[in-house]
Image (cartoon, rainbow, N blue to C red; front, side, top):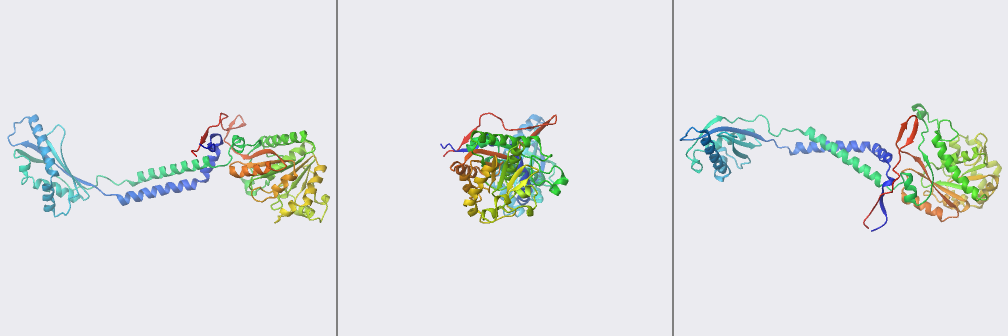
Length: 474
C-alpha cells in the first residue's frame, strides 16, 4: 500500500464545494433538463396502451341444489378447468380463426369473484375492439369445446363486455420525467461536489502544513473590495490596503501577523533584511500582500523599499494609482541609463519607497540576472530596514528563481483553491534549494462560512480533530 493520500478530510472546505456548485449551476440545470426530456422521449416512444374488456357470468350446475356453498365449490372447479382451456392451443387457434388473426397477442384470464359463484373473463390487448371481440369469441367457442370443460355447467351472462374507452395504463410522462430530471440534477450535484473534494488544491489552513509540508506563515481572509453595488460598477477600489478606512480589522490583523513573523526573522539576523514574496500563478494576490506588509512595516516606523521586479506585468503603480509620467521606469536603471535616486519613487503619504516599471516589458530574464540587479539589491539592503521584492509567478517565468539566490528570505502566496498541490510543492522545492530561507506559505483570500453573533464575526472553520486520511491501493 502506498502512503500517497487520496483525500485529506481536513482539506475539505464547505465554502469551496458551495462555490463550485454555484458556478456549475447551469450544468446542474442543463443535466436536469436533459433528464426530463430524455425520460419524456423514452416514455412516449416506448408507450404501448393496454385495453381491457371483461364479462361476468353466473356459474351454476344444471342440477342445482340451491345451496350457495355447493354452487361456490362447483364454480371453483369449473373456473380451474376453464383457465386451462384458455391456455390451450385449441382455444387460441379457434379465436384466431374466427377473428382472422395471424397471431394472438392477448392476456386472457378467468377468475372467481370472492365469496360468489360469479366468473369474470378478462382480456387485455393493445386494441380495445380486439379485446372486446376476443371475450365474445371465447364464449362463442365454449359450447363446441364444452367437452373439455363439463356438461353440467350453466353460464348466465350477468355483465356483457364493452369496448374500453380509455387504456388501463394511462400515459403520465410528466411526473416520471420530472423525477428523472431531479435524479439527474442530484447526480450532477454529487459528481461536482466529489470533484471539488478530490481536486488537489489547498482549501484549508490545515492542508498547508499537512499536504505541503511547510510552515503556514499567515492566513489572509477574503475581503471585499467594493462593498456596495454602486462602487462595484465604478470599480473605485483598485487595491485592498490596510491604510484604507473600509478594510476590516481582521484583514489588518492578518497582515500584521505576517509582518511580526518577518520582523522576528530580521531580529534574529539583523544583517539579513531582503525578502522575496512570490506565487505559483497569476492572480493569487502576491502584489497586494507585498504592498500591505510594506505598509505595516512603515507604520511601525521602519524604512521600507519595495521593488516591483515583475517587469512583465507591473502592478504597484496601478494599485497606488500613481500616474505613469511620475515614474522613472525600473528597466532604465538596469540598462545604465539613470541612477538609483532617479528611479526611487517616494510615497510620502504611505511612508514607503518604491522601485517599479510603468509599463510591461518582454524578455526581462537577462535584466533580472544581470549584475545591475545584483548591485541594486545590494544598495537597497544598506538604504532600508526592509527590502521586499515582488516577482513574477514562479510557474510562468524563471525570474523569481534567479532572484532567490540574491535575497535572504522567501514566502509563497497561495490563494485558496487555485493552484494545484503539485505545482505549489515544486515551487517550495525550488525555494528550499536556493540560498533564501523559506519562511512558509501565506494562505490568501481564505473563505469560510461565517456566523454573525451580536455584531461579532466568527469564522466557521474545519474541526480541529485528527486528520482522517484515505489511501489508495497502489
